[in-house]
Amino acid sequence: MTGAECTIRLLERQGITTVSGIPGGANLPLYDALSRSEKITHILARHEQGAAFIAQGMARTTGKPAVCLATSGPGVTNIVTAIADAKLDSVPLVCITGQVPTPLIGTDAFQEVDTYGMSIPITKHNFLVRSAEELLTVIPEAFRIAASGRPGPVLVDIPRDVQLEQIVIDAFPEPAVADAPPKVAEADIATAAKMINSAARPVLWVGGGVVAAQADTICKNLAETASMPVTMTLMGLSVIPRDHDLNIGMLGMHAERYTNMVMEGCDLIVAAGVRFDDRATGKVNEFCPNAKIIHIDIDHCELDKLRSASLGILGDIRDVFSKLLPKIETKSRKEWIGYIAALKTAFPPHSPVESGFESPQKFIRLVGELSDDSTIVTTDVGKHQMWTAQSYPFTGGRQWLTSGGLGTMGFGLPVAIGAALAAPDKKVICFSGDGSILMNIQELATAAEHRVDVTVVLFNNQCLGLVHQQQELFFNGNCFSSEYPIALDYGAIVRGFGWKVVDLAENCSEEILAEALATTGPCLIHMPVSREEKVLPMVPPGAANRIMIGGDTNG
Ligand SMILES: Cc1ncc(C[n+]2csc(CCOP(=O)(O)OP(=O)(O)O)c2C)c(N)n1
Image (cartoon, rainbow, N blue to C red; front, top):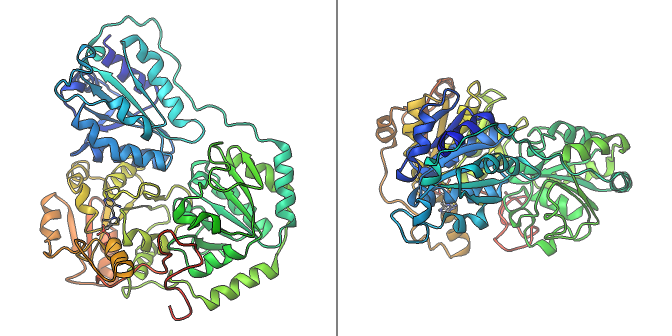
């Protein structure tokens, strides 16, 4: 068979059933082979960034590597953003790119870019395949690397002549599986248990690593046994149900004031699957100065990277929590819990306890209440993302897909399509802004073609809201280049792609919203929002977390 046929067979053997991509000169042999696959469906995206984010949506929903395809040159440069996004959020992605024929590499051939060189800093690993024979090791290896330990993106660049090369294959390699996680040191578990049991004011801080390890249930058990309040990074928001007694919300730049104050006052942080990102810690050397830290992560590079931990535990978080739980004493920690409750009363949270139409936050809560608990939520990047983080009634697991590390506008729609393809029995809601939606709006066509069950809630404030807010607060109100002077007719645009549109600007009631959410298939809900609606509280970029704007007793 050809190198291209071999590649497709290897993907089938890995259990891949859906790939997204766009064909071009340098990957046409692969597409020709793919057309004959009975096991793999191809989703033709309308832009390669969309294709890579569709694959991300599948990977983030299942936790398993997903595949996207792009041709050489502009195809590759178009997927770069989505690969970098996957790297920062530890998403297992396998990108297979076409390259110019081997003899032309390095000659500035038509549609040649140095894909290998360009992708080094944004992938977990990358390969330039030199012969069809190599594919037999490279493809399974790409899947093993993407899925092992801390997941991440792997790129496989295959020159056109390698795709066309004929080889005889006696036997295919076994499909790759993820490596076993590192063994957890028993002594570390004993030390951690002792530290938790003897702490007076502990906090459990969870991030995307807890979601990746599928450790949400055991995490909740641990928190309940120890009466440890739980704070989350943006990536870890769905680990603990929104309304759980021990949930003290997201920490950091857009945390509730009381949450950051709890962090200031704690004496022990059990940090699990977090990477001490500056949006969470603020000025990192002023972050929780009085607390000891137990840092648990599957990636040894994270331990002691930004803050030295009193105890670093290398291992799979579910494994660590399972070993830790039997050693944790059941405590009520009345004083600590009482102190937190008092702080919460003194500095009431912005995240609403009621739903309605009076604010974007209440509206998001209403959308959540009208939706099934299994609904998958994606966002774009901006105020709407933070409002959703502050308000959506998450219930657990892989329900929350957002661009945490790279903060990529244009993420929400294609990731929602990927999520809907991977979980066709679930509804997917994408909260977006009028800036972000335009960055991958062409994927409305892909969604319409496949009739995916995606609802986009579009908050239209006719501006780049979060940027506008920063200009108002930190640049003396000089809102330069962040307002859209003309109002677009989203109804006409989105209907033009074959979507249903419900415009709440025309008619707004709970019944209309409920009916829109009950729609199966692509539907956009247009929700006008005032430019003045802010995301508060807010820690100014680069400041310590105790320096917050908004969120005091006066709101
Ligand atoms: C690709 C990309 N370009 C620029 C930015 C910087 N940025 C962050 S938020 C934002 C505004 C987002 O506007 P919109 O999508 O309308 O959301 P809103 O804040 O109004 O809710 C911009 C430009 C980004 N995050 N991603």
